[in-house]
Image 1 (cartoon, rainbow, N blue to C red):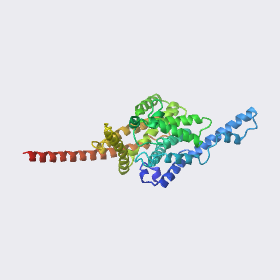
Image 2 (image 1 turned 90 degrees about the horizontal axis):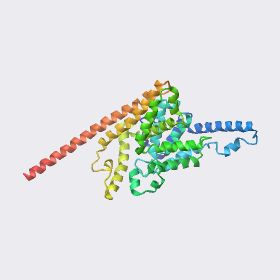
Image 3 (image 1 turned 180 degrees about the horizontal axis):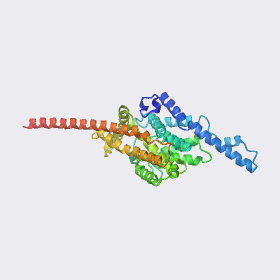
Image 4 (image 1 turned 135 degrees about the horizontal axis):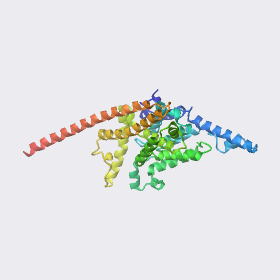
Length: 377
């Protein structure tokens, strides 16, 4: 079905269909669904806590005591959290709207299934990735961090050390929603919140190279199955780096879709880019070249972006190959082949389009030059 394919098109969905797909993705999330993953962990912790208290002679406590303490996950919590995240995505944003949330979550769930990471990532890691993905752009302004800073936007006051204002705000809002909806992994709810926050922080493009370099260094040092296994744990530095890289991959996965869908997403992206560029120009400033509708070539810029995106997926595939070589038989590096092939196909198509536009532009200039020469002669 489309929801289980790299060819998914979130832009074609109605608001009702978006909600349905999100619910299905949460249930499909490897590990018997997000609700079950969180609830089973909670029940295990209740059982452990009860055993400890019984050994200590604290017989007056009961399951009800721990339930009231917030250990249980209400059945409606996950859906409420997802609804909160969707509603916090301004529908007026051409790109950073509700469809973006559905798009990247569908991509991430599909990627986990296709590569076998669903079999090796801990349930806690899978839950954290999904929860972070749902909230990574909540309250997005449809503009860049640089623009927010230039405006002195309120989000700038929320900046955490080394993280942009947009990602700082979204992460802060995500952790508040987690607490409000009582989505916890007892006995360490703080760990879940911290990992979700750090994973969202990782989507800040200014931190891209730092994350890639750190992940690469940890990957190179992992030469045994035991060392590789650290990447599959929520508690380890390696595991948190992998979640950051996975969410980054999902966040820039639009060019991995079929060409028509990739172009549709491009249109949404550049509506936001050009709107920001227009505001910068009207204020007498110089816009980012990608935001300048007067000079930017979307097909040409798309080729450059795809080449950048490929580096992320090549790194992920290299990691999966290393896992396989270290003895982790469940992973399937070939699960990324379709993604990489699609990137090559789309890059070739955009390059061809860019060349055609350049040829037309040169032809128009030549005709204009000839006409002017005729007038002056």
